[in-house]
Image (tube, rainbow, N blue to C red; front, side, top):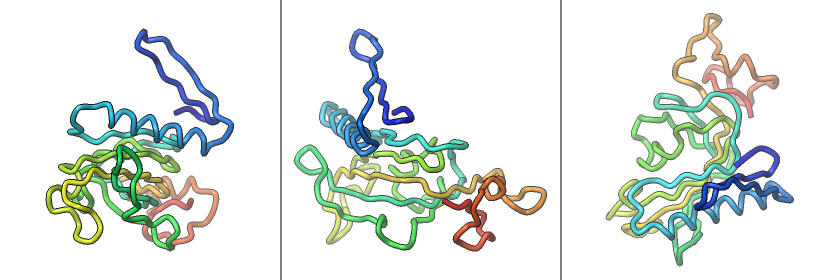
Length: 189
């Protein structure tokens, strides 16, 4: 995925190709389908498949960083996007998490590494990296492969938690006032 609705790829002969899409939505939809095709063509999914949809800006996130995320989760059904089982996209609250804290499924911990603020990524997570054999009663059947679209809205890097003036670097760089109290150090959208 490249800026301005471009995607680049290479074929079996290592020839580079580029596609320009008419809209961001078309580029994002294509990228999701490429990731689903990768999943369907692998004999057994034993790790998280990641596909960037939008790249984002700034520093790549790593373990220990605090994030605020908008997401939608689908069940993998009939070799593609199935039923939505969870989403916070149209809700007021973003999901807050600290990478590496073990508070979210292992597939998220792995799949979000390297994302940048404003970035969107598509994740396909095998059962062993999600809810496994137990599933989530009433929502996620046992041994389900899950698909997520995650958007990284806010970032607080672990190594910048205390700047010399008490503000995080990302808060100082932000041109607009944060819609949440600045004490949490998250930069505004």
